[in-house]
Image (cartoon, rainbow, N blue to C red; front, side, top):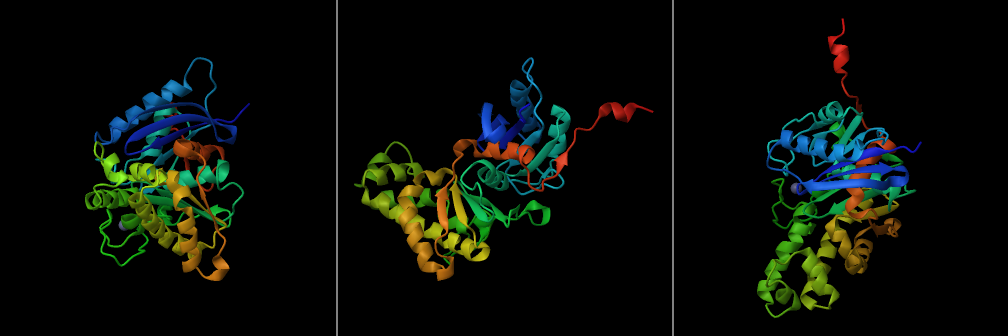
Length: 331
Ligand SMILES: [Zn+2]
């Protein structure tokens, strides 16, 4: 019988649940808006309700387990979600145990960066690599790192917070409170900020005209750049150089075979790739030249597929079994 697992992707905006089969195939899926400001009990109730629409239809066999990708910081070894900035009221929530108990299936938890890296490693753009970095560039910058065939976990499973590497001495403030983080300069949020500024300075550009009824953001910059708008192309040129600064550090640190770029901005990678590659080549030592920089392959499903891989094709992750209530009352 085919192995299946339930993948749960808790985003600050969307909550996605999917039943995943062999090869990372999405068999069925469900989505709702995350009750991100309503506290952990509300989100756990949402997860259980969505999961039950997928795993308990009459006659369908139970999945082998449940994998959860959650925003960090979290402690994967203890199954705890600690205090994600995008989820209000979450402090040391024993999410893995709560879901295992409610859905009566073994459950594993990891942060969303590691989970996406695992998904791309097993089923996507990092297949076959033994050393690579996965970098997601969207609202922030996150990631997961695999070295010599093992996911780099670190104390509490918190390794791979690549967005908070310091890559500039420019006084840009990061959400973490520090100055000069890669995320503060190169995230989608940073690109949107630069785009809004450019629109006020170049009111006759195509980007400015597109931005009359919606605020300028990465998507709009991409649209204008593909139509040849010089302002948008210059924004992406600068963004590519900011991305390259962080990649240069990762390449020197890890000596990867490949860098996989995911998240919303990966949709613009083709426009930025020549500058990223030229800049990385200019800044890295010659022996590190030639690292492949590629777009992630799993798209919006990366989170649920990677989460399910915590059960179907894991790498050193703790599993939490459902607690048996019968045992507690027996003599
Ligand atoms: Zn930071």
